[in-house]
Every structure is written in structure tokens, then in C-alpha cells.
Length: 367
Image (cartoon, rainbow, N blue to C red; front, side, top):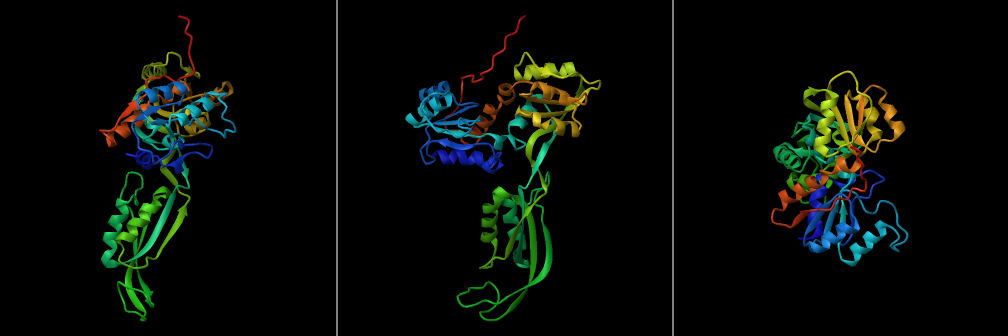
């Protein structure tokens, strides 16, 4: 089993095209064609985790955070990043990062946080646009059902909780086969008119190749007439954060106790309590203060995230409770998420979860 065979599965679930512009997700060191002996899943790549991979005979490390985030001009071992990269290269260890692309899907990092809190009725807090395309193609009526079926199986036609969505209209198409053509209908040199159907479907743009391949495989025409349009529609399945609901209303103190127990954090920074019970909960793993206004606009009663700066707490403005549970703490279950994906798809392959706690932040509690 090659490294690319494993990472391509992750990219089907969380395509690299979903990562933010500033990110560096994907294969960072190593060769995608290497045979993979074993995979070690972690949140951060450190020298200690690299040593763990060596001891466990794993030549692939799958991390949430990219070890190389910005450009590196020198590899002289003066920083932990340089030392980790040098160690990986010397020991033929591939490092792969699954970062904001995994943040930006509803079943990703924030989905695991929502699982820990038991949230229901989940939606993306700040959906993204520009990720949808529309395909229009023309088909003889006799083959329209077959073509639609192929398009749906390739991932087209999904709108929210509805699948196999399409629009079909009737018309008359004409064409004249020239020399060298092998027409499914009509005769060489003779203009032919045919009752045709125009089929329209939408799909996420990263599935374009497989959708077009399915269309061409199912279509009877030698040359398929089709058009692709980029859509500005918001794609509800992709974006930042999650908005969900608690099964039952909770007071703020009880919810903070739930947070503390679910994420193993004894100290939770938060703003003043509002007077109403909590029902709607907004969440974002990692540094998420950029979504505070989105959480307020969505009607959330509390927003759970991390890395909130002092002045950013004022943004709650009495309209919402803002709770900071710590960066590592908010994303710790990402390790389980990636591990579960790999184990479900490769049950006999050696996939391990790191035993190293890479959290660089420690807390002193004066009890």
C-alpha cells in the first residue's frame, strides 16, 4: 500500500482545495509512491513524535497541524521545525498534514467537538461560496436516465439533505456528422435532428473530473455537448465552525462543567453569563475569534473556541457567552477522527495514535 493510496482517501473526505489560502495541508516530506509500513496519527509533529514513529516502524505521520507553515530558507537545526524536518528526511518518514481542509467540512474537526457536546441539528456556522459548479449537457431521451444515474453516483446532484437533484428540459438538437465520425444517430454528411433532453446538475468543484468521466462513460454520443458554470451560491456543507443545539436547555454553569469534563480542561476563560438558558451552541476548533460576530448573528447563546485575545472578549458585548477552552484541548479529538477514518477503511493496516502529548501549554492551578 503506497502513501498516496492512504492520503487519497483523506483527500476524498477533506479535499485539499478546501484548505485556506494561508495553509500548507498535504504531503510535506517524503514521496507519495513510497510503500507505507505504518501510519502514526497526531496533532503536531515534534521530534519526540518522530522518534515514536521510528520506534513503531511507521514511515508516515499524519498530523492536523502542518510542521512547515511558512517558507523555510535554512535547515540548520536552529528551531524545532528545522530539526523535525531534518529528522524526518534522514529517516525516510513522510509527513502529511490534514488541516483547514478538515476544519472546513461538517463531519471534520468541529463535528467531533459537536459529538463531545451532544449537539443536534448541526449546520455550518459560516458557509463558503465559490465551491459549486453546474453541469449542463444534452442527451437523447433514450439515455437520459442512464446518464443521470451515472452523474448521481459520481457525486453530482446533492443539495443539503436531498440527493439525486437535477433539472431536465426538452428540446431539439441538430448535428451533421463529418468525415471520420462514427455517429450514434444519423448518417455521415446528412444534418440530423433529434429530440434531446438538457440535463442540469450541480456538484462540488473538486468532483469535476469524476463527474465528467461518468458523463462521458454513460453518454452514447461520440462527442458530448456540455457546459460548466461556476456558481456563487453558498455551499452549506463547507465552511467555518458549526452551529448546533443542545437536546435540552442548560444553564451556563452546567454547560461549562460539561465543557470541562468533555475536554479535560480545569480552567475555562469566559465572558459574563447572559440571563437566558443556553440552547444554541456555536463552536470552532483552534483559533476562532474571527467567527464571534457570525455566532452572534446566528443567534447562538454561547460560542466555544480558543486563542481569544483580551480585547476580543469584549466583542461578546453581552449578546453571547464567549468561552475559550484552549487550542490543543479544542482539537484533541482530531486524532481520533483521522484514526477512525483510516481504521474503518483499512482495518488490517497498521494505524497508531500517538501516545505523546504535544500540548506546549501547561496550567498551574493554585488549589
